[in-house]
Image (cartoon, rainbow over all chains, first blue to last red; front, side, top):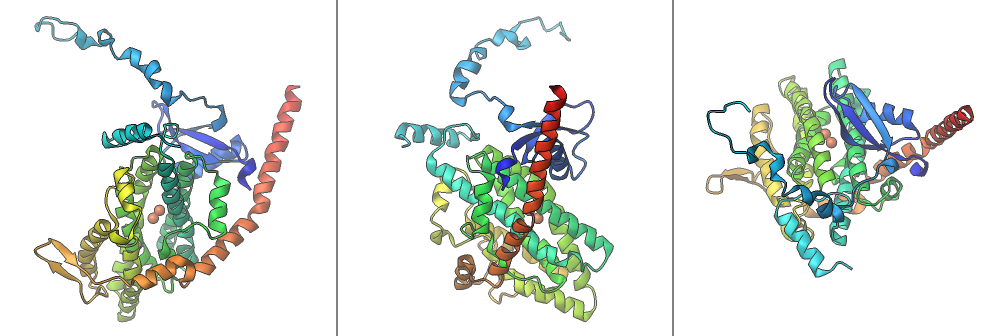
Length: 94
Length: 315
Ligand SMILES: [Fe+2]
Ligand SMILES: [Fe+2]
């Protein structure tokens, strides 16, 4: 059965100039087959010009329970945004 | 065991309109209910290829043939998107496939009806995909992220399915008397089973309340069914075909069509496995799986050989 067919995550670049974006996942025996299958499953309507495949087990994800300590410190750093700074109205483009 | 605190926090996230992602905490029942719904949905896409696959080699023109072939291939894709999404909930593809093949999993009962004439390809695209689209558009807003994303992708692909079906009906309805009759006959046979696709009446659907509370579903079976009837009646009028329901009439006060009672005995009978094609569908899926075993094994053997070659080269 599929036991021996690992899961792959599929990333597709929709056109040159844009980044590869996660499209979904699928099962395949190896990387080559993952690319073939990704072509059939995710680009039947010219959705892509380039595919990356990576075995799901190689992805390390952050833990949602730790997302507070990871991401909240950025919350009170409003001075990283341009709107934090008061300038006179005469200054138009800055 | 899920604690009350966890359940409350989860409900608060749902009420705030947050999406739930695979690694987030979720109630065991939420997970179970989603696996059930999503796997049934995936199986329906896969089994749904059979009644239409039946006509690919006999399509009346090349135009119809490429369209039907592309549609059936899309349905295979839909099945794959949904299986992958279901797998993020911790069930394996093997388990999912096994549940379909051994008959423990359900799929949409509509696919247990036979496709007897070419007009059925029209009726299936128009009515069955039409009904599926109504359900799937709702599900693009479902609370589970991977399911919602699969639905967005699927909905983009579905609309051609319904249009090609309607175009088939249109050609037949404007054709010879025999062709028109063939179209009417297909509508007669597929109308009621299409209404049944939305599932039991709300009062007989024990899971509805909880799935609404968790925003897995945003509308009830009866609401969706009404939407389908309201949308489809004018389309039948344009075809000049008659919907086989003497009780069907516009209700000015409600602003909706009233329609007759579904034969619920037939519905439950098909759900329980006694529809005209239940056995055949499972036999065909099992045969496809068994006959494909050597391909799956060969692919693994090839992958292993290639991997070994790479190792010996780099050594
Ligand atoms: Fe589909
Ligand atoms: Fe479809």
